[in-house]
Image (cartoon, rainbow, N blue to C red; front, side):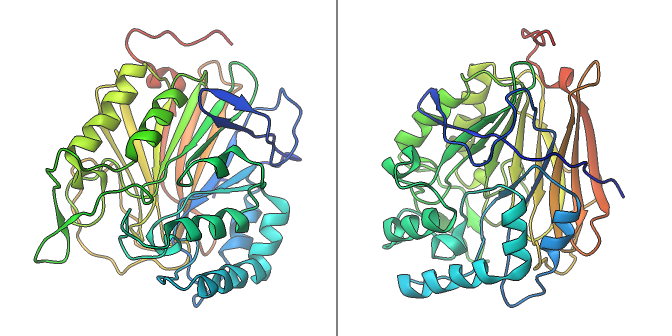
Length: 355
């Protein structure tokens, strides 16, 4: 089992527009790079809650919640507040949050409606409860725009990691449900996943200097074969996502996704000049039973067990290495892994910046 090494704390710079605002979640000397990241999705309060101690034992510098932080499909905001209060009172999670900075976006069940989008009637009230729970300051720029998207840059020049948290709920056009309970592609040219304002913001984020960029989507980006929620339900929007990344010449792009109650790693050519990986980790404590789900882009095995994800970056290597890992929630062991070199995540016309 691979383990993370400890550092005392982490500095985050929250990013809005195309500039960085100094809104730190925890303090770190400015020359400290981010090298150990944990993440996960889908957390039910009526299931075993020991996963937080297992992740804490890995000593991550930050945890990214990918969504479904609670399960409360409701328009009753008192019920939602009460469910978040239950999460906050979980002893393991309380210990974890004291020790590790947590950043979060939402998915459908903490948003408030199964597979919900812009037609959810309590989206603004739900947004305020979500931001309150995760400690977003009252004067935060994140509170000044619709949705919960935000971005952070961590580390010194040459060793910067950007974390871009997308909101795939607040602005999303309704999906086209098929007779089998899944979805078929939405061909309406006006359909949107992120909404105009978030799309403009996202393009600006990709112009901010960073060596590694973790683009966090609550739903899978690259999977094309499962019939449930995924970016390919809106083909034009996924094409726009890929083109926005390619046009920006952004280096170091990795997708992180949740939602599916299993763990896997996919990769594909999105036109960025290098293959981009999508690591899915979902089911912190509520994975699904195994099945034979195909995925033409999958690398390695699929993990049908409770899991959390990890990203480890060795900045000291001559060519920095990035390890993507899916860990078993029961003991932290690594079940799915992929190693890349930073030089592999550069457009053909882009040279790696000097160290």
